[in-house]
Length: 212
Image 1 (cartoon, rainbow, N blue to C red):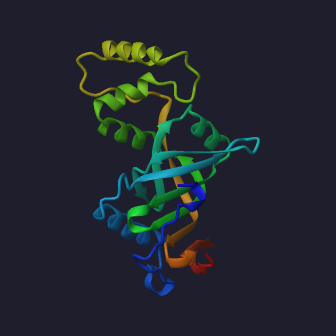
Image 2: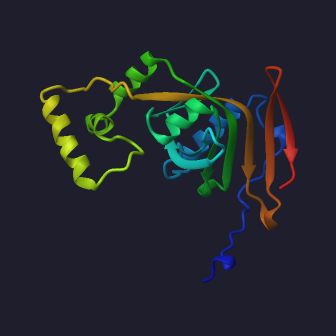
């Protein structure tokens, strides 16, 4: 089969501006719970798009770890490419795609670092292996081969031998994205999809329908 011949017709549900919550974070929570109920594979996986200081875009998949005070929260190595780019240019975008329910959510906003206490609390809740990994990997740096990571992991295990939890590395933390635009996309037949977008204007949300 040729790529141009791959098609899927969407027909599960519809979406109307009169049927959504007045607040997009409530609507997002409704959709997230429905994605979980539908057993979407990793429903909290999202594409994070950033832009470097010289205007070069990049994107990768990260995991949403909370929606707190109207912010979308995720954690990472602050010295990674995404960490450096968000510090230099906090404008970013998030995208969720849930094919099992034929839905997509697009978010645009501005990222700021979470408080150190919040990052420490979340880090301590992670599995020990993930904590070791955070200490081990110089994320986004060029390394010679896999053995570099294996050797560093052994060194970290030796360093913290006997400790159930590790302290949070200084270079590890989180970002919270304050959204100013959130779009909910529901697949429909013949590519005439439903798109409902919320814009933040003077601290209030307005709701509009977009053409597919």
